[in-house]
Image (tube, rainbow, N blue to C red):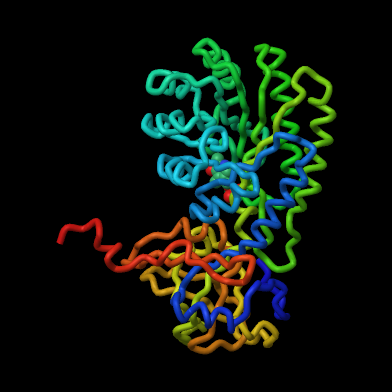
Length: 420
Ligand SMILES: *Cc1c(COP(=O)(O)O)cnc(C)c1O
């Protein structure tokens, strides 16, 4: 992989060093900071791109940023929630997101999770043919049922999500036909179809192809079984430009491409109107969340190391996937990038690195470093290894003020489950 060009930083932040210093008086680093105005503007753009489909809905993948305040903001913008566990269902329920505003896309699911989903009136999306009976026995078959399709070798996947045929998720094509028939005999009357074959995908055409795949399948299901699907859920997986210079996915191109496919395959047929759903996480909040951390040490051995007060327990993606997250040193955005260093946390794990051989400005103890694109699959993947604590989450509001939307864990939280 080529190193980024040593030139000034093309990724910006919506706050200044002075603002961060003010915030640090009450909230010590490390902390997450989410940009409310940018999140709202972004979701509006997505909704606009699909406004040709009157009942379109984005079900935000709760696991990406499971914070009630963020979920509330998204709900105000018309989003539903996509859950995969009992805890995520409860989180939605607590903020008043229930009924068909909740999509329950789980796998290897426990009966108690299905029970809660049914009790909330959520759309239940089954991951396996055997769950048609499991759900019927444990909870009863609801009126509305959805199945997750795994196209296997028909689609390529990518490095993050892997090959569909290797994935543990979903029904085969043949199983779908059996499943709908079986659900119908068990009393289901309304049907949806779901797939999730992308992760961090930046090519808009990929999502158009997914729509074509599901539209064609909807036509085949109608022909063979006489069932008229109510919606297709194209899943999530829209990517974000983690690296400077990468182009952002254009919602309009995706929306228009899906619309053309709709008009060609569904429009004017008995399947019209067919609702389009998405369940993105990353692209909704990812670029608008920042992990703010302070430089605490510099070390020079066989290489240069910059030590910060955040670690992999706060943001796991670089250590786990080797993912690139852009770094800015506040106030040094225009300084020459003449230091090559690994940026590290304090875990006793050598993959606790936010960056390897990154070109940075000369940094000093006390500098504030901002880790970009941490707003999805960031805080939520945090853990307590090495007795590290999860950080606070803060919301930068539209008027420039800041709200604490999750306090930092304390040592009392760490000891709360122990009997000493
Ligand atoms: C994780 C997940 C999503 C969201 O993925 P993003 O890459 O954050 O868009 C959507 N649907 C399902 C079923 C998921 O597991």
